[in-house]
Length: 294
Ligand SMILES: [Zn+2]
Image 1 (cartoon, rainbow, N blue to C red):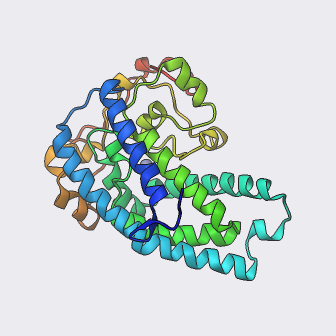
Image 2: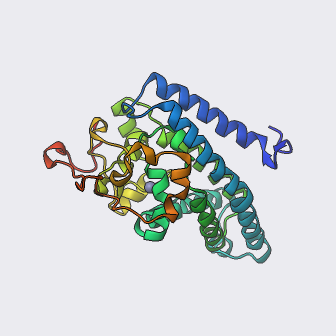
Image 3: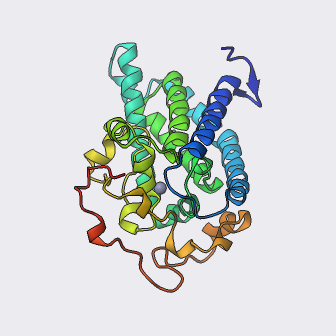
């Protein structure tokens, strides 16, 4: 693979990997869907393509240059945890990768717990269905704020450009996978989920029930939710309504509406427009939280 071939400065190999991942998952989730969609795919594709294009442009023009500066500082000044401790090269990459993923768990949780950040992250969650087209549908403001977080991550952890690039490509591919509406055999997904975030696990994170939305923050490894007791797997996918109750009316999911959403007075997120708080009937949830339902 020739890394000198670039597309607007981005190595063509990473564009090809993510593009192929998208097309494979987009096809697979049509053949074996996990949840029945509630809205028109064509309409959502337009919104998600526009919002994702702005997010990716912000990543390219803001996040990548900020990360480059931080990576250069780490190697010039030898700052950060992994620069202070001496590890064999492979162990340094592995530890850096795992710590990058742990710190993204905290960033994702902060996006839910801090009202200012949630205004922006809510744009990702008001998508009325969840599939691979939702994977990069983030408000450009959220992506720009994540540049600051990435600089802090790189400087504190002291990761090398190789570890950072490896994590970013896996992060991108895995984000496509866990947002996909792909039905995997339950026994297989339960097994994979011992290590990785899977579509059923992340589907519960996009539920319109507040307690479920505040679960399953992990990005690549599912361990972080187990470790922090935020794991919730015992919700059947057929029972999940994707979205945020205060923003479930279809007029909300238009390009302009979602882009201005963070700057408008916020609704009561967890009440439907008729004032009902969405709750889960306890009888629907029989199994322990750590047991994945169909
Ligand atoms: Zn979230």
